[in-house]
Length: 268
Image (cartoon, one colour):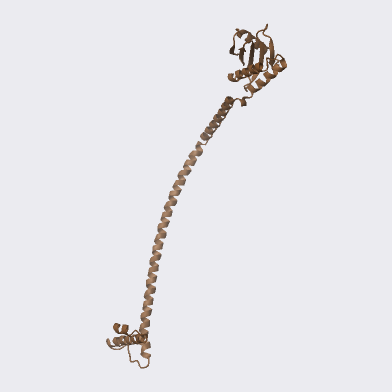
């Protein structure tokens, strides 16, 4: 059964300049002889004496083969493993094999195969795989958000209805506010008018009080002064004239005492 997670499963390195393509090493040691036999068979079928890169597939596994000079390296991996990762692993094995002086000891060569396979299986170290993983995560989040938006369709309709109700309430509130402002302005005008009437009434009362005071002064108090011959209730206009003359005399005397003779004389 094919593994869900992409993985490099098996690696084999062999000589091509020796009889029966002598195997140098393989990793890991699987209890699947058919896998090792299939790898050897593909090497024999593919070798033509020149360098090559080849991919072959079975029902569950892909084989990636690289031949350089007299060395062949083959990798078996799951069907969903990216080919570029497998060939990158092959290049790493060849470079280390050549850089470390073509080691012939199986233990040393197995270490190389193990480490390079581990790099290939660490998909998080592959920038392209990581980018693809991030894209898939973003896609999943986007699809989830779309589902949430679709599920909230009814909530959006309800929210739209509530928005309409709020707008209507705001309009009614504004209308009532304007009406209240008009009523308050009318009340202020009415209060101002009442205040003006009260002021006029107070002024009228004060004027009447002043007139009564003058009348009492002229017609009651002044006649009681010794030596004053004055009767405000005389016949015709003579009483009014006598009252006016008496008041003028009193005013003249007051101004004379205060040095205002010329002004009073002119006024008289």
